[in-house]
Length: 88
Image (tube, rainbow, N blue to C red; front, top):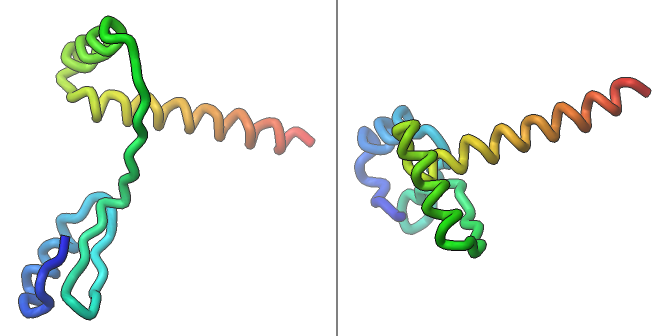
């Protein structure tokens, strides 16, 4: 997403509100990058429905629910890998 550089107060506000990603100045304006990259995989419809229901029970979208669970798995994997390295 590109915005003109002519509104510095808007850019300052965007920078304060940005939770993820980055804002960078370019020759043709300001570029807002989410820092997100898609992952596509196919799942049995029943399993997808089950995941959606689990997310709904927690008041989350499927996207947020999956992000939380993948982050938790990755953190556990990192701790496991670092823990083993520290024992040497």
